[in-house]
Image (cartoon, rainbow, N blue to C red; front, top):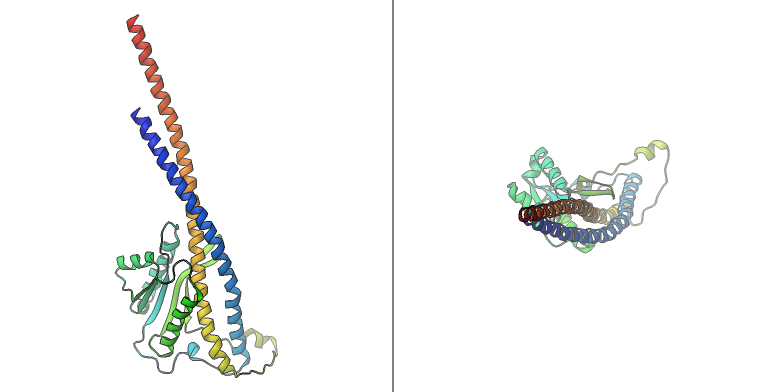
Length: 294
């Protein structure tokens, strides 16, 4: 009887775990749907800005901007900023471990980045860096799992101002890039300086292109478009990271729910066998006692 009671307690515990993981799966599915809508809605805007800036650079002639070429007075010891985006909560499968593995590979391959300014988003990444004795210059806790454009744009503006003042040499973002619901990959994105605009390229090789008249001048347009591009790109990184976290948690909780269901079936089978063995033993004892009395 002791064995059957123990198995019955385990069945009850596994059932409680299954209910919790099922609830977490449903919550993650709901959050994933909203986050996916936000990430896919902002991507055309970000890509459109890049296309517009590229076309402007290709047709405006010899124009440049400090956000592309760097400021004229860059400090020699200006550090590089590495912003790492992780989650505040766990139970999301390999999401954080994949990002942090990419972080370690990047820091090993770039000693300048490891000795520069490392900033972190998410408690999981902060704990990992502390355990590995990597100094963190700043931990951003203002975003949560619903980053707003205003907060992200404020952070991007801080980077832009510091870069234009020559206080930092560049900004790299390490995050989970969302490709589709079935594929997410850790990525290192160069936010500052923006990659140089290709002038001519395939469009020039194909033949004469469109002629544009710019009003205001191309330099003024770049002055407005490039900061907007930096802010939109950083916001897209945050959106990709959030939707990747939710889809990873959804998959992990579904796997946990399925495993709990399978374990419950196995425990139920063991319970039935133990109960049948106990009944058979009791019947044998009763028959043996009756035979002894007779």
